[in-house]
Image 1 (cartoon, rainbow, N blue to C red):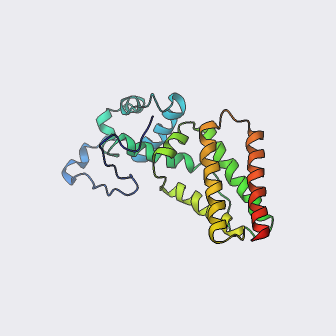
Image 2: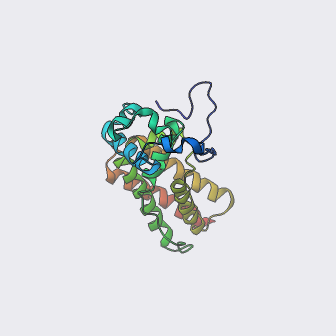
Image 3: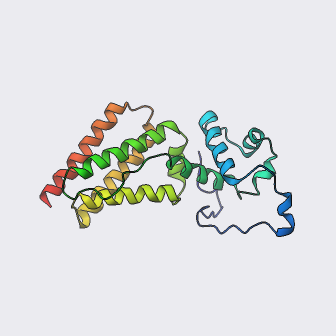
Length: 207
């Protein structure tokens, strides 16, 4: 199982760590034809092909035709690279644009679109769900997803504890679908999502 840090290790998210540039005198030693974007893209492809348990920096380097040590010019640890790959995968989802109409039909449709898109990402990248549980999810694409969800919650018209509860219910629903996304038919997922939305609508009607 992937964990955010090994036992006894204090780890800082790749999105929070300030990574100094290599000393100027050594920049010419960096592998040619390699950059962080290319490494992240190759990581996503390898994870898709072989899964999380078989992933290693050595296998990734072999696929890129470089030495494993070459990768550490661009990332400090394997955990950092997996965090970057997770956010790259999350970035494949098209997010609803604009602010839904408060109290109207806009937010339920937007929430359905958001949840179904998230499910598709997890179905396309089965390794993303365990990484999402292990890492803090504060990359740019994860934050854009959170912002889209916040806008939808704002549009429900709920406030205070009711809004907090609705937001938590949606987050728990999306997190829970991660581990079972390939075992749960899409029709069942959509039915459960409809029930969740109906509950939020009922709560909003009495608020």
